[in-house]
Amino acid sequence: MADEYSMFIDGAWTASESGAEFDATSPSTGEVIGTVPEGTREDVRRAIDGANRAWPTWAAMSAFDRSAAMRRIGAAIEARRDDLARTLALDQGKPLVAEARDEVEELIVYFYMAGEDAVRADGLLPPSVDANKRVLVQRVPRGVVGVISPWNWPYTMPAEIVAPALAYGNAVVLAPAPTTSVCAVKLAECIAEADLPPGVFNLVTGPGPVVGDEVATNEGTHAVGFIGSVATGRRVAERAAGKELLLEMGGNGPLVVLEDADLDRAVEGTLTACFLNAGQSCTAGERVLVHRDVHDEYVRRLGEAIAARIRLGDPFEDETTMGPLNNTGVADKTERHVEDAASRGANVAVGGKRAPQHGSDLFFEATVVDGVTDDMEIAREETFGPVVPVSAIDSEDEAIAIVNSSPYGLLSAIFTRDLRRGLRYAEAVRTGWVNVNEGTNYWESHLPFGGRAGSASGVGRVGGRFSMERLTELKTIVVDVS
Image (cartoon, rainbow, N blue to C red):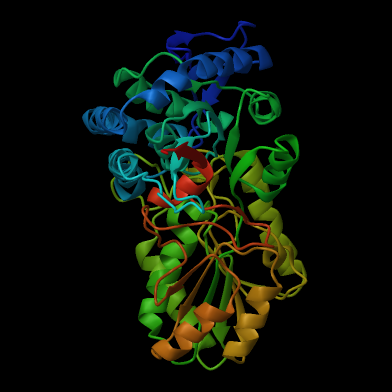
């Protein structure tokens, strides 16, 4: 019998005020794994009201007390790590051994790191023009932070905003992606176990156009953090106009392999860039630009590496390295992009189709599409599936021009033995992060991460203390001491 889950509002586990529920299903089998409340706008309003009652008292607490609370959450996650990892494999589809356990370990880091950063939100003591006045500039919380989170990393993506928001004294209302709501409930259980004051953290599950929209538009939220697609992020920005925004949106992770690259290292980086989480990452390598002099050898080695290293299958089998796609929408888009590329002259060198024999229609083969050109959907849009789209280039300058012509500006990577070329590339491309001799899915949770200004990849930075710019604000106090 499927489990029944609840929302967490104002310190209490609760059903939707409408009584409605929806089924949570496993992407690897299609089976119902639980029922989740279908939250309404009124449920969100209740959560926001509770958060507004709670945050002034929470903000007034010592930063060291809030730090201790973050450590309690981290400890609760550690104690439940096996259950959290199994839920992730069941609800999202990540392979338990190859990926799910790693995401839980990173989740622990986020809360411990937020606890450390909480006590470092120091201010300034700038001079005044008046010798009789003293000026204090403090970092203060925004108030209530609404967080709208995605399904591809259902623990760490919300945590990169939720953890520092709480640590800096904000209250939080989390609206998770419906297709991984069970994971969100499991995370909420760990936060609830840490005994934060009622209303400081709230979870409302339900459809994005209802729950997420209310979080964005309600006057009771003072800042909105969003992680997800470009289209939805733009909608959130419109609906939350006038509020502080922290938006981490899409990317196409261009990965460049120059003629002097270590090809074995480049292939290794490509495997992680394109097949981690079955390609469902905003930093996945969705444009692979390979110098013509090494193109054929690179494609040959890549095909051999996929055959030897990528194991598609049941997320609970130890040898599985890649699980199913999470939902029908992304599976359909992946299939459409591969078919469009083939119809326009690209060569599907490896894979290219669904693999329902593994348990559901959401399994998709590790795929290499060679001969990709700019007119193909796979080159212009986020595929978000396990596909390596390869294009041949003739120079470093051509690679830079292609990267900078993209509407995205999140992360890029280059492989070259000449670090001078790597640095020139890193400085020339308009992305918020550049890896040299590492794949596009490499990043560290304490470093600033986000899209370049003017791109479709978002605004602001997550990552350790760097999220402080959006989750707190400066307050100036002038005291006359004469």
